[in-house]
Image 1: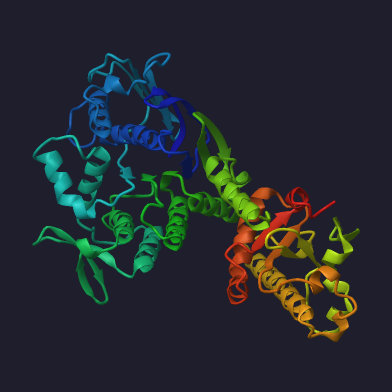
Image 2 (image 1 turned 120 degrees about the vertical axis):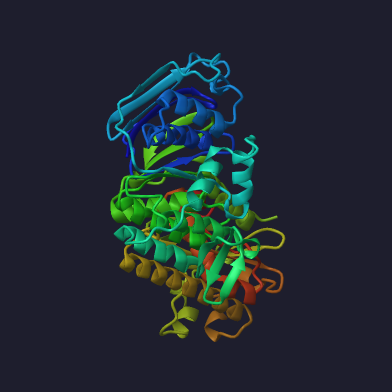
Length: 339
Length: 175
């Protein structure tokens, strides 16, 4: 589990120092505040740690990281990720189970990261990034674009997800918590997605038959991605899941149920980082924190400044919350002001 | 001029001809038992004039509490407020129509002369001491509960409001 994150001069993020991370962590803020950037920065670090010393690959952590940053942020040279006009090099330090991983590089860096320190033991678990959009319907296109054409377009968050979804469901017993979660995920939409080897396509299977992905709702496909990653055991209790805008394409009722499942998975060990600008997400996670007495750290961007709070202690002061109050006040004015 | 003290708040001052304390009225007593009702109605000048039907509370159950009994309490609370505001609306209009003999000598002059076809009605809950950020979900819940009343009475889409004492004061409802 990631317990601490510090970064400096990382693209739009001048400085983040986020300690005491929990099993569910929420990043909120307006468009362009750097929420997704933050998740991708952390994802790149975790995937580097997970690919390092895995199998017979002889690559150094610095080589893996440089490639991960290149393909995740799709920067011609990774030095382009250093904040324009920043006060120094880009740096990131995260602690995984209190073991530190840190690196830094300057603006002129093309792909050689000279400063990297790793005290995290090799990890066998996998982390995954679930983007705002589903990838099942683009699955083959993503793989072809990256594996045959080697082109920018679909970044590593999409490519890694497409590869992870390609893994066949594993035989044998699911992790206990995952079995219940999968059943709940499938109940939300009354079916599951299944990969057909012959056609090389995904289908949505219900009691009424099989339906092509093209006629399957976007929200179903999003839920199905998590279901598939649990069924093929790509995820395990030590995995870290990054969810960008979980609210996208989901009805608030389905979103609430998804977040209930996230809470169960988090109790079983999986760590979640979510970026959102949804009132429903903040409110539902606030209720989960209250009900379960669970620590849910929240990092919120307000006018370029990041503030740290805890949903267990209450709803944060943030433009998402403020806007709901402003709309209420506008309605009161409309109602009570005589013409 | 008159003021009304309810749930620890002092409402007013209102012109006596424009304020009907329906809860303590003979008109309300005449339709008992079993008719819960809001505290008072007050006419606000405008084009058209507005009739604010006001219920006051010193607290509410917490709608955000995940405990099942709190959820039930909140639903009961919303139902109670809905009934009180709806009953007050019906009693006001029917009193103005002359259907309640008891109202003949106690209905304030402003109500007696009210044009029922054009007057705007506002169903208002005032909760003392509530933080502003707690009000939006409470208002949504009450709007939802009063949807049928708003539609069947043709009250319009923004006829239900929930205020705290601070906002009520800004709108001239509290001293």
